[in-house]
Image (cartoon, rainbow, N blue to C red; front, side):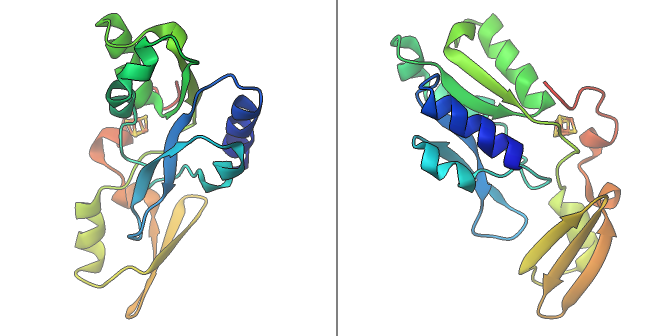
Length: 164
Ligand code: SF4
């Protein structure tokens, strides 16, 4: 996480990117939210863990106008599958390669909420902590440690290219 924040900070400080699209902690536990970072002092908000399921490549397309207007490149945090989407957009001509700086992150998979619900029922999750291959879920009536493998999206269990 710290490395991601440091790389992003450097890119902004050296004005190599216009802004960075990444993930921040969401308001709901186990949910990250996409974030656009324009100021290097905000890079401490960037996270990357099992909750970062959104494919940020789609946000690149949403921000296509600045990309095609010859401004500085846009930085984007990308898992392996996001990287493949970015390549697809480039091949389709929706974005230009030289206008994107891909910040690749090593991905260990993302959470499938249905699997989490099967484990904990309707009990409310108030917080979570990831330690190695375990995830600790905490709530009012909840204190459970699960193997991350048990709650990963099926597509992640056999992913051969988790990194860009
Ligand atoms: S493990 Fe592979 S398929 Fe799953 S989110 Fe990561 S890169 Fe994508």
